[in-house]
Structure formats: C-alpha cells, structure tokens
Image (cartoon, rainbow, N blue to C red; front, side, top):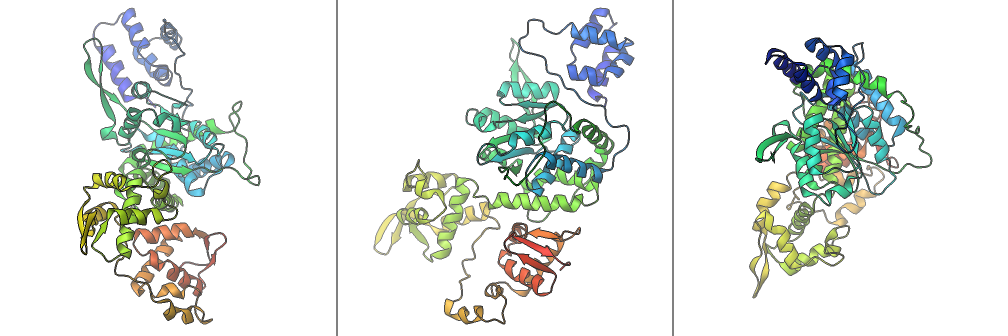
Length: 532
C-alpha cells in the first residue's frame, strides 16, 4: 500500500526547486530501505527514473562509516483476491494452534491482535500483547516468533534502550517484539514510561532535544508492541495489555515444530491479512462495537479495537471475541493485583467481619498477617508487615493513622470512615455486604442433607428470584453461537461483574434441573444440551 506521506514528499520534491541529479540522489538516499522497496514503482513513476538506477543510488548511501547493519523488512505483496474475514481469522487461529499451547481465549485475542497490527494508521488504541509465564520453557519465544511472521515490519529484539525505541518507531513504524522483557523493566523506568505512552494515538509522542542547538522535537511512540517475559508486567503496562498466560507443554500435548529454515505457510497467510486489512480499514474504523458489560473503562479501551475487527469479520467472531474479552478481563480481575489494591480488599474484609468503628494499627496488622495465601506475613523481604509499612502503603489513598480510643485506652489506628472513599473508588464491584450474615449452621443442616433437595440448595437462599433470573440470562448469552461448553470460570466472572456472584450455584442448579445442561465438575465446564 502506498504511503500518503511519501506521496506528499515526492510531489514536493518534483514540483519544488529545479531538480538536479544531486537533489534526486539526496532524496532517494533519505528514504529507508522499507520505504524504497514498498513504494519503488511509485518512486520510479514520479522521478521518471528506472528502478535499477534508483536502487543503485540508494545503495551507495550504505556503509558510510556506520557500525552495525541496516534495518530492512521483507514484506510480501498483499494477496490479489479479496478475503473473507471469518475464514481468515480461522486460518490465523489454526496457524497459532499448530505451534503453540495456549487457552482458546488467548489464541482468539492473539489472532485479532495480529490483524490490528496491520491497522495502526486508523486505530485509536494499540494494546500490548503480553505473553507471560511463571517459569522458563513455556513457549513464549515460540509464540512471539509465530506472531512475528504475520505482523507488518516485524522487529524482534531481546533488548532495546529508550533512545533506540522512539527513534526506531519514528523512522520505521515497526511492530516491536520484545523478548526476555523481565530484565528490561527492572533497569529502566523511562523505557516503561515510553511504552505506556504508546497506548493511545493522542498520547503517543514524546519531546526530545536534538542537534547542537538542542531544538525540542516531537518523536512518535505509536506502534504495535508484543512483549514476552517471565512473571508479570509492571502494573501500568499490564493495564494497557492483553495478557496471554503461557504454560509448559505436557508430554501428551503435541504441536508442530516451528522451523527457521522454511516458511510453513506464513507468507501467503500474511499476504491475505494485508489484503483484508487494507480493504476493510475504513469500515473497521467506523464501527462502534458493543462492549461487554462489566469491563472497566481501561479494559474497554483495550478491547474496543479488537472487537471492531471481530465485528467486521462476522461469523462467530463477534460472539467469540466478547467471550474472550470477558474471560481474559475476569481472570485479570481475579488476579491478586497490585499490592495496594490487595491491601484495601483485605481491610474491607476486616471491617465486614468486625462491627467496631475504629481499629488499632497493631490489631489491623495482626489480622493481615493472619490471612493465608496473602503476602503480609512475609511482606518485607521475608519479614512480617509492620504498622509503619502499613501507614506508608495507605498514605497514597489519603488514609493516615490517627489516635483512636478503645474504651479507656488510646493508640494509633484507623477509623472505618477513613476507608469508605477508597473502598468506593478502588474496589468498585468488590464491596463486601456488611449486612449479610450467614444462617446459623443448625438451621441448614437438615435441609442440606435432604435427598429431595439439590446439592446447591444451601446457596439458593442467598439469591433472590430476580438475581437468579439475571444469572440464568447471562448464562444464556454466553451460550449464544452454538457453544457446546462454557467454562465455570467464565460464568463466575460474568456474574461477578454484575455483582450477583452469589447466584452462581442457583443459576447452574436451574440449568441442570431443566435438562438444559450438565455440570462437569472435574473439567470445570457446563456442558450444554440446549439454551436456557
């Protein structure tokens, strides 16, 4: 596809000052290798020079005392035939599954993201594709290699400085594929800031001074980026990413070996992607997709461009993309998250269990340390959380310790009211129901053991009819598109987003009693036999 910027440069060159051999040579040598080869026919037409001469003049500029080798991209021509979006995405999905072990939702997201990289000129946001794993040898590099063969101007790197990053993006607009990124972010806060800035088109530029006069100049940070690492991304980057968790392959799981000495069908598939993206770029940009309920504003920003692509492709992809969005965003929300959010969650739980309006710092710290599967018992390099560290963690929320009274004694501590605004702002949708108390065990034991009742009757009393009806409808929506199974995790996440997670068991009980589905507890699936 011809670059509009290059066309303008050619027109200015041809219609500007009188052309000379030297000016033509200077113009040709100002072009990057990719600009030249991608637009060689157009350049030859405007300059009225043979392509062989243009290439010769451009080549004479190489190797003038510059270390390293020049950056070049070997891009295929777009396919000659128009492409069907539904079939194209299925083909991308198949190619990923040939070489990679990952869950279906992650592969759907990656397939959509690959097409998004071909739409950077019209997209409003470019989420990062983040491939992470708990340990090495989980297939991250292989997945990144598969992606690199299908995206435009792929630039795989295992390390990059912040200066090289924005200059590379400014000159080549590549798709950056950063491997071994866990070591990069520990050493460069500025690199993390630059990657953060490239999420939305409006914020994707930085100012740097150049030349002997230190003239301020804008540099672009706008471009698609995929990152592979062990562990988690920094929180600010993770909140701008589609997270793909990688896992080590079991001996029983078989995939093809990705070869570096042969194509394995990627070049013709990339040509098809280029053609479909070029034909549908304007259509995709004009789509206003329906965002699944329960996604936060940032999650909606991440998925909006991917859902546009799914809607344009049609077929099963609109439904599959939204299911993937809910599943991926739900498991991100279910992740323990950043430390400060964890802390608020646990303090909220403390107040839900205790009626007192005040708590001493010592008592609150003791409660936090007592929690299992939380970090507080070994928070400070293997040592317990202290009152001073607790105060430091709470200070950014505007919460400070004060003198509180317990009967006749006073001590440093906190009031319940001090936390209410922070709970409302940062734990939206996660509030504990302080007024809900469990029924005494003696009131339910006979009912639970009755053979006439479902195994789930213990929970039926905690959800009203409207909540159960809403939960059943949400399951029905997840079942659209002919799905044969639905992940329990996906159902739980959908209900949690609507603050009716307590209706989970009751809704599944209804589906099972009505013969509409069967719960497979060992697999964690609802196997559908109809639509609720």
